[in-house]
Length: 156
Image 1 (cartoon, rainbow, N blue to C red):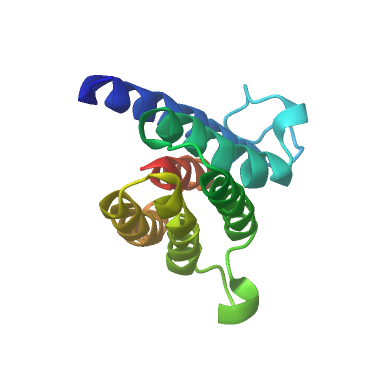
Image 2: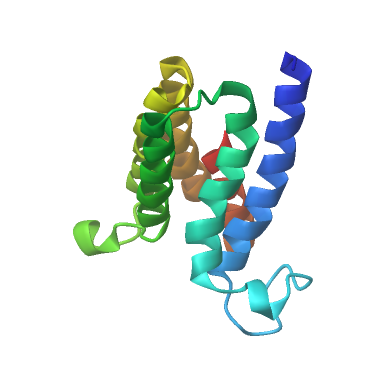
């Protein structure tokens, strides 16, 4: 598959991730934006445990090399990503820290090096998650736009 197919997969994953990241952060109130996200999706586990799967489904068809080691590293990435997505590090910094949130989301990708993902992709994603999530959250004022943007940065 070519570069255009990879870009298409990543764009689709970005849209799905944006919606799921927001859904996982929404409350149960019917007035929360965007209103079209159903109540059954508005649970924190949606963000924590579906987003790593979205990322894996967009990358692994292109880079995965099958072995028991790579399967273990994919599982480790999944667990570390879910843990990173579950906190904004306010217990450590006294308030939500989206730079730390992005850093640990990016850092969770390191095991994927042993699953066949090139190190430059992992390093680039670490930088994009850290700087992107931090700056985006600092510059944007609407909670639903912030969360959808952070969902996109998780994939990028």
